[in-house]
Every structure is written in structure tokens, then in C-alpha cells.
Length: 339
Picture 1 (cartoon, one colour):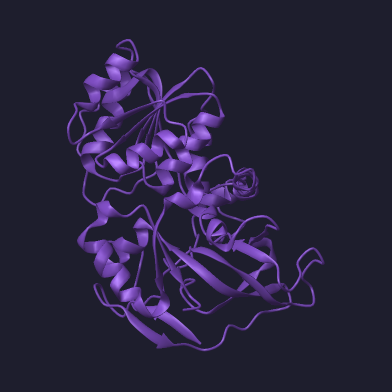
Picture 2: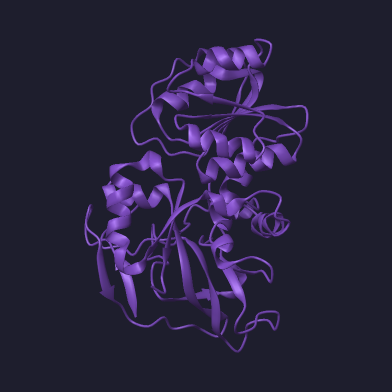
């Protein structure tokens, strides 16, 4: 079967790989769409410290069940439209014992620590598969990145009394925006791209700030009566936005980091203590896939508008080349594995 492989950084090849072999607890998924994430771009660029080469990328998956093992529960049927939880957990590390399998010490995410979903078929344990009778396959491919953003709002303990500053309005940032707005919070969205900021407004942001033209700190102080944001969610992964998150947070506030900084971050740590901040990491997603699917099914927002472009599998090299050259132009790229 066909797959996309990174033999080395900056290289993309269409290759033949062995057929997926499902076990008795697995479903065999005919992959239809794979969304490309910033982590895939970092792998392409050779900037991910957790990826070795060669590697098949991809962890944002939608597809159709083609076969099911004899021990798969009857709720799964051939022909079901599904998405996939791409994470593993060991069940015994400190995080797993604490009920936080999303940050398992030994997690292996599809396309990162193990080969991913940019292939024609995928064998997946049934516990990692989620069905929908309502959503299109394009919508199902958005479930994982929206879940990552949604989880960050849960990590920040967002409530209706909060003002939430979200740095970055890509798909993961939009997941955080939607989650915070649904919890009743006042949302301020920040990005360098006016198109993404307009999208952020459509998904629930009350205020938007273009950081290429405006002083974010000054604008946040203005919008919060000079108090700062009670919750700041960083979904960019740059040293400047890591520091800005701390600077813009209110006294007694919470800072949530989703983004991975690609370079070392230097802080003046005074505000850590003076503001008594809760500084939280947010990794992957915990027990929100089904909730996000239900949210998508209600069609409260035009989620497919997040998809900037769809490339056929045979043009995956073009997709990564175009994205690498002009990353700001894209919110979400999907690869159509059937073409």
C-alpha cells in the first residue's frame, strides 16, 4: 500500500509499505483524510527532537472501517466513518497512574515516535477509534487538533468569570477559543494574520489583536481594566510568546503552554512568584474526543472553513514545500489519501 515517508529532513517520498495487519482487538481503517499539524512541519524541517528518520508522518485521521477483528465490540461496523486517537499509554507510569494518560511518560504518537497515518490503511485498537454518523470525513479529520485546544482550556480551569487571552489562532488555537467561549469566558485572540483573526471572531473571540501591528500587552491591559488576563493560553511555540504569556497574565492567573518552543526560552522569573501564577503544560488531549465530536455535530461554527487546502496523496511533497515556504497562509492542510 502507498504511504508518504520522510527519509530525512526536507525530503518527502511516496513509497510502498507492507499492508496493515489488524489483530483481534483492532479495526482496519481505510484512511481518507490526514490533517497536517505544526509538529509534522517541524518534522519535515528536522526540528523535532522526538522524531527519528525515516518516518511516516500524520496523526489527524479520518477514514472508514474496512474490517474488524473478532474481539472488537459490536458497536463498530464495517462502513462506519471514524477518527482516531493517535496517542498510546503504558498504564503504569506516574501520569497514567494519576489518570492522565495524555501525558504518559512513554507515549508514542502516530507520526512522531512511531510511523503515522499518511498511508492507505491503518490498523488501530478499537479503544482508540471514535465514530460519527453525522460528520463528514473532512470534519472528522479536525477532531484531534480541536481536542488539543479544547484540552488546554480544561487545563486552564476556564470558567465564565475569566478573561482568556489565546496566543495563536490556528486550528489548535481555535479549539481553545471555542472551548473557552463555550465555558462563558471572554476571549481575546492574538495572531499576526488578519484572516485567522477574522476566523477567531467567528469561533467565539470577543476581541482580536494583530500582534504585527499592535502592542499586545498594552491592548490586553486596556481590555481588562489594566488587570491582565486571568488565563493565557500559548499556542504558538515561540520564545517571545512564551514570555508574553507570563507578562500578560493577571495576578493569581493561569498560564497554559500548548506550543513547543523550538529554541531556549529565557525568563525574568519575578512575575512567576510575584503574581503567584499557575504555569501549566498542556499535552495532547484527555477524554475530550467524544465531546469535541458532539460539538462538531451540532454545527455551531463553520469548522470546515479552517481547512485552507486539500492536496492529493501524490502531491504531499508539494503540500509540505508550499507550507514550509509560506506557513502563515495556511490554517489546516488536509491530504486526500484516496487521490
